Length: 229
View 1 (spheres, one colour):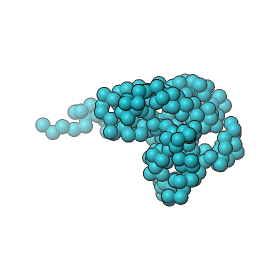
View 2 (cartoon, helix red, strand yellow):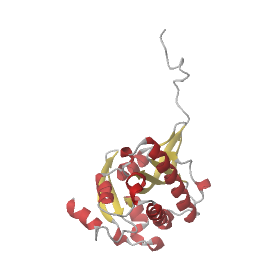
View 3 (cartoon, one colour):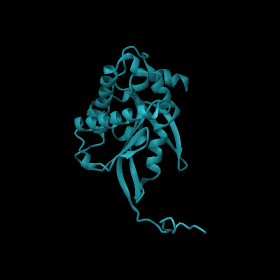
View 4 (cartoon, helix red, strand yellow):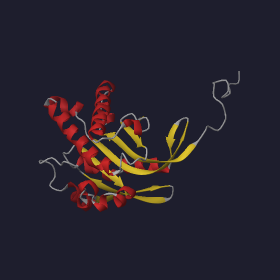
């Protein structure tokens, strides 16, 4: 018997396409997830979603203005619809500092023996741009760019070099539109350009920021990162 896609219930046709749709993009990725057992990951994933929801609530970001959160196994992708109620600056402050504070509190509440397996540290990216959507979900070069920035070696290295639980990278669009102007009290001097990736033949740059650096961490992990590159 010669099976065909039709026999499997698949149809060879073009799916309805929506877009381009402009969205603010937030993605998170847990550090060291692949070293944890599946049962430990269950608890870590629950905590990831719980802390994200709490940070969004504290930042005044109504989840009804967001696309359904896209699960990425050891991370999440959040797409926020353009609205005056949620300026992009709110993702940088207060959401990121609040998420970092929640991570500090969560890790501090763990017994020392449980921290290696159950501790939470993560990388975050904030970007914005146009994307497409079909029946399978959102996609496009701007999501690719956000994930490439998030996964860049320089961002992973920055997290390894600090005892802070969260490292943020922002795209050039976010840096030039928000950070450089100091909206929401942001300090451009605390962001360092340290990431360069290529998407669709274009070079994309990222600026790294480490909120709430722990006192026992490197005195200036961003400077150390810049000197090592």
